[in-house]
Length: 206
Image 1 (tube, rainbow, N blue to C red):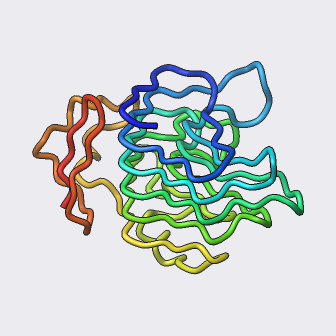
Image 2 (image 1 turned 60 degrees about the vertical axis):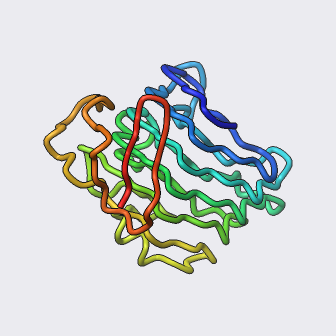
Image 3 (image 1 turned 120 degrees about the vertical axis):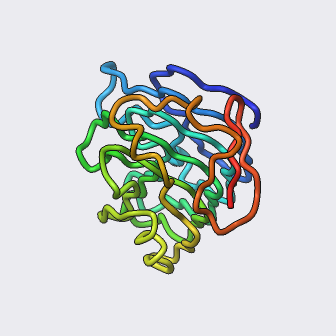
């Protein structure tokens, strides 16, 4: 799935399967809904119906102004659940978790639940920022900054490195993020030299 613009939706995209490649999409203003209990404002959830969600690759996507955590890895505590070998890399998260259903989701771009069966996933070179908190990642009952998230490498078999906080965005302030304020000369503190493109957004990553 690539080159899509998802705007003003009130339901998450639930990824339940194997070997999906989601890249170069823009998820903007994903909202919660009052029609169902629990968090429904995520852009993407990796969550099993059949017990297995494996070998999916989510990369080069942009997530802005989501009410819930923008990506959530979630399970149901069942013995057969298996969410592993999935990779989230080189994604951009700005102002996610701005009105989550549960308080732990405030300001979170990446949210990983602590349930058994969720292990050995990969998180590389993602960029995150929120005006609500510096701790934009929730990893197994612990809220952390992207830099401290890297320090949790190998916890539950997860491979974690190169994640960073978006610099020079503090002047944006609270409220909805205006993607037009970032242009081609925007510099992000990312150790991997590459380019990040989504419709309407061009970011140079250093």
